[in-house]
Image (cartoon, rainbow, N blue to C red):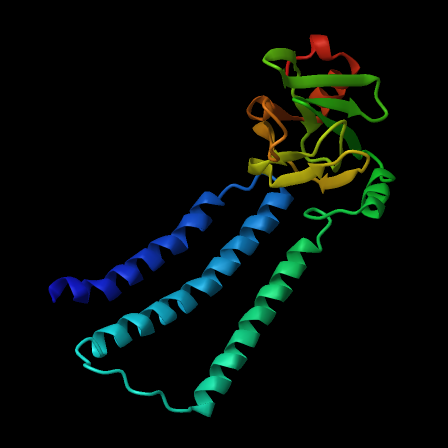
Length: 252
């Protein structure tokens, strides 16, 4: 009896704790893209939490109230209740759709080729072509005489150069694959795009914070998939310009 009474309390406690998980993890955004995605996630969590607690609360209450019933009674029609939950569901879906579209429509989250062309035409924009190969990455810095490689191929290291990007600068990353489907994914920066054979996808981001970030291939691409790792080094603009001019003599 006493244990059963603790169920609603535990549900409430878990819900309250869950509310703090994402905001704490999201403190200190590393890019505009990450900020948009995590803020949307926090908003969805804030909307889902009271709905979850309400539904689970009704369930627990119903189970408790009718726990000793010998025989189930037939339900009665209640049009007001049906209309209420239909309208409430429509409102929730509308909220989710509008909020998600407001973020997914941002070029910092989903960019088209036209968005990329517009960004690349702007002064000081940095463009890098990223090519996925089993099982490493090729980086070509557009407009610069620099191409680097990093990753692993059949157990042999083929390069150790990170992807170097400037902080506080608009960056366009064009992804493509030489063989199978890969996925360029830097979770700490909120950056992700599939790398497909014969097709370019685009990432547009700016205001990156200086630091070192892990880069993964997020699409299973064969036996060397787990070794298809790299790093993104975000440095100040001066260091970046020194790097593309003379990578061997620039510390990043």
